[in-house]
Amino acid sequence: MSVPESGVISLKRLQTACESCSLFQLCLPLELAHDDLEELDHIIKQRRPLQRGEYLFQMGNEFRAVYAIRSGSIKTFTTTDGGEEQVTGFHLPSELVGLDAITTGNHPCSARALETTSVCEIPFDRLEELGTRIPGLQRQLLRIMSHEILTEQDTMIWLGKKSAEARLAALLLRFSSRFKARKFSACDFNLSMSRTDIANYLGLAVETVSRLFSRFQSEGLLEVDRKHVLIKDMEALERMAGADHHS
Amino acid sequence: MSVPESGVISLKRLQTACESCSLFQLCLPLELAHDDLEELDHIIKQRRPLQRGEYLFQMGNEFRAVYAIRSGSIKTFTTTDGGEEQVTGFHLPSELVGLDAITTGNHPCSARALETTSVCEIPFDRLEELGTRIPGLQRQLLRIMSHEILTEQDTMIWLGKKSAEARLAALLLRFSSRFKARKFSACDFNLSMSRTDIANYLGLAVETVSRLFSRFQSEGLLEVDRKHVLIKDMEALERMAGADHHS
DNA sequence: TCAGTTTATTGATTTGCATCAAGCGATCTG
DNA sequence: CAGATCGCTTGATGCAAATCAATAAACTGA
Image 1 (cartoon, chains in turn purple, brown, yellow, orange):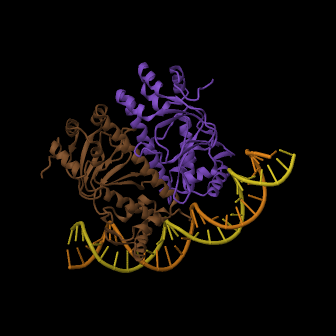
Image 2 (cartoon, rainbow over the protein chains, first blue to last red):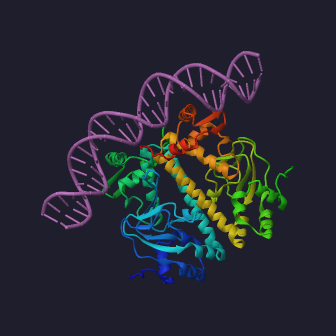
Image 3 (cartoon, chains in turn red, purple, blue, green):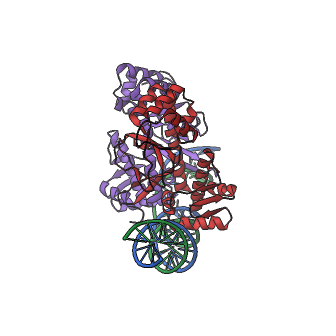
């Protein structure tokens, strides 16, 4: 299937996109009328796929659009004063990236492809305008943002209250449930990001993450092979992820 | 000034409220027309002030409204599986509480007054409906949520990458700039929350926070007396807050 | 295909902060 | 007003995870 560098995608293609979960987060729970769907289609642009390491946008760039991931994966990160990188999130197909830029008008973080990644661009001013005419769309946008706040609160708890093993277990479970939501296997998936990125996101050292993977494997909780993970004892992981730092 | 237990507040009162910064976050940047302001007024309800320790809402409660703080302060927190409390935020006058409940329809955290606190209740369904008619209002709502996401990303960086001293310094600076935004002194303010709450929020032990306050004072960075803080060397604090964990 | 680079793993050592312990002032209560 | 409880502070000790160090394995590109 050939994809134009940038241009309106057909309604048929949008529907296919929804089905293949790529626009799931914004469209599916909405049950949009045919006309609304067509309107939404007209403002969405398909972009040339990004190669591994390419930037979707960089910190400080002007905010014009949000992006729905169709396939592949993205990491977002900021660069601190000291030049250190802090990973703020991993983003999978169906999810929306860039919503944290609304207030400031500039992207507060950079977004980079972790593998070959295909995204749709949704100009924000047009989405906002469309939202005033399609109440369900506006509401869904608020929902998505509210959900993002929730996820981040969860992450804050990991970082503040949980041990290294609990954090990694929790992250793996989060991935698992996100894959499951897209009807993929919940136990068997690939990590497109490096150990360094995982460690960075979890506020740990690479060595610690590496050791934990080894330990989880030796304890029979899972199998890891490079980027591939196979969860063998989901319940044990859940117990581990739930445990508070000291208890 | 007597306040009805629950009822429509007058337009005049709403304007006063905006001026006194209590609805700042939602109204002020908006420059609403007189008619719009009146509409907004009709959906806002003044609630009886909360006493210290009283709940505004509890985790699991049905989500019906967001709350704008007029005076006082609120802490939000979740309770983990192990019964441990995790403070997720401190909320000052002019700020909105409860936006994280939109997705789920139930409050994911509890909100409790840290001191005598007066709030306005804004039924969410009516706010949403009003937003479809006043585009500026809808946009402001998105902005506020986006800003909340940003703040939390910041907090995640504190927890993941910063030393104990950097975290406390950063929190004090955040308070300082929030007070300043409300045209209060940026250097001289009261902390309505306990050391335990601060420690909890920052992912530290109470003892560590206490030691840090003592050290900051002995180094001449600030003066603390019970709940009162006077920042004496803002730049040193900024340097401290900016430093990465290892550098 | 082979040097050069990046990424992952494992071991030894250090350290920042939690934990344990004890004391003190303030507020509560019968 | 005495005893209990709570919030805060300070000191001594222990441990989880960072850091340092070394090697292996996997990519990179001429």
